[in-house]
Amino acid sequence: MNARTSAHKSAAATLHADQLTLRAGSRTLLDDFTHTFYPGEVWCIAGPNGAGKTTLISTLAGLMRPAKGHIELDGMHVNAWPLARLAQRRALMPQTSHDAFSASVLDIVLLNRFPHLAGWGWEREEDRAAAHAALDALGLADFAARDVLSLSGGERQRVALAAVLCQDTPLLLLDEPLAHLDLHHQIDCLEALSGWARGAGRTVMFSCHDLNLARRFATHALLLEGNGVAHAGPTRDVLTPELASRAFGYPLVLIRDGDDEALIPALRATSRN
Amino acid sequence: MNGLVQRQPIHIARGMSAKRALAIWTALAVAALAVFVASLALGSVSVAPTRVFDALLPSADASSDLAVQIVRTLRLPRALAGFGCGALLALAGALLQVLLRNPLAEPYVLGVSGGAASFALVAMIAGCAWWIVDASAFAGAFVSILLVLGLARGALWRGEPQDASPRLLLTGAVIAAGWGAVITLLLTIAPDSRLRGMLFWLTGDLNGGGTPWLALAALCVAVLAIVPIAPQLNVLLRGDAAAQALGVPVMRARLRVYLVASLAAAAAVTTGGTIGFVGLVVPHMLRLAFGNDQRMLLPAAALGGGVAVMGADLIARTVIAPAQLPVGVITALIGVPVFLWMLLRRRRA
Image 1 (tube, rainbow over the protein chains, first blue to last red):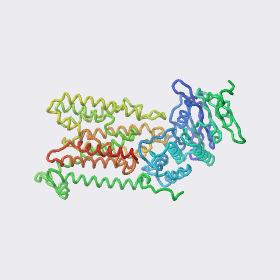
Image 2: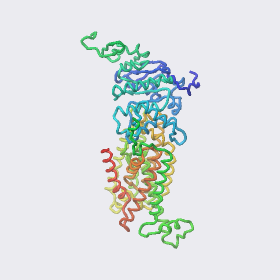
Image 3: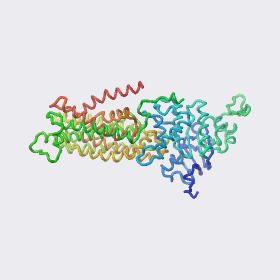
Image 4: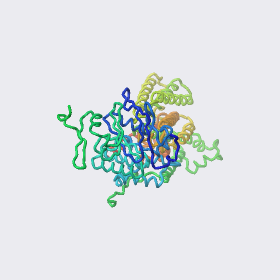
């Protein structure tokens, strides 16, 4: 808790939620939730629609203030961080991107170098190199000159992911990064993200609707029931048929085929009811 | 694979750099200088360009030489006012297009010109001197700015992932519609003898005899206030949540953009009336030509808008000389087809 350590400059960031309570109108989404998210962990935030996944991610990023409790990054209250320094420590990928005007994919990705710019705010060669490296990492090297307005939803989503990667922060908060992606791109992105987290001891947190992808790629899971109850822990302990059935209000069963396993909706007829 | 990568000829592929921006600004500044000299030289009495320079020197004798007098007291203030108005309008348009994240935004969309016009028309009906009309216009613009700000304060940044721009746009558009009704009312009850002057004012007219200094001073303030945060504006275009997460103080940045854009529009309207289409078209033309990097675009829009209005005013006072057209007619007559062409071209692309 005695804040300003040398951790600020290291590649790893530790995120701590302290007695966090989130509300939407009169509903309590999360009640008195305390947990620490460590470097090297890949977290999936799961839960039904309206359970508070986006609210939680915005709060963890320091954009929204919680009803109660607070967030700490590297031991310092997230709202005590200067905005620019905070942006060097954590990157946020919002659920939607605004594109009112034409711009090249490279320009869009370069925008996430903003926290690293100095002087008059012109990019240096290393910023361009970081942007190209991020595009390469997601197989988008050939897209650099494309106009964002001409991209499909899935392509736009991968560009947004490349943008947060090139921000080069130890903590990544991603709101539905896999939406609109077809299966092999979902897997490519998740592989890129887990490689990114493992390699340099970074933390990745993403919200996701596909529990099976989460079980395969996330090391940890945070399951929101949407009524204040949340389960946090290693993926296999949290995304179980029992807990997931309760959260999603539909019976799920785990089926196995050798090493492969999947959570699937049970047929109503064979469910316990 | 690499052999297949197309070398895209389009400008947006290259990205913007300080060097490229400087080249664009220099080219526009040269164009501005050329139109400026032409504005001083051409008219009902032609003055050779070399004599234009002589006339501007302090040593020139204004009392005996008619050409010197025309250049100094008629054409110089008017060319400067035209440049100032155009620069302010194009800058305001570019800023509001960023603020509202809407390509159709222009300096008058949030009601600044409506407030200015309503107050100015009241002063004209009362038969006030030109400087009271100007002061009323500025006061009206200011009232409108405060009104929109007071009503849409919460729409600048709500700390939520949802985008708040539509609320600001709607508030401003409704206020503008209200002013529109006031203007119609004033035109209806105005005495016939004053109607012609009022209509000229509404179309945009640099013939008013005002001074260019308000516009030029406002231009300096606006450029100094906004150019340092141009990199933030690039990020702001990506949405409020994304910008805040990237370290942009969204609330402060949007407030500054709104105030600078509104005061720029107010100063322009006070100087030249509601000159149309410059604020909408000039930023778009520059975007189409050079991309949408605000670090380049904002100074370029100021220079380009200045060239456009100065040039349009040159046409307005020479094409049917010795009679003069309101400059707003020329900017709109040229602006409408250009804008439609851009809009349709974009839909096809």
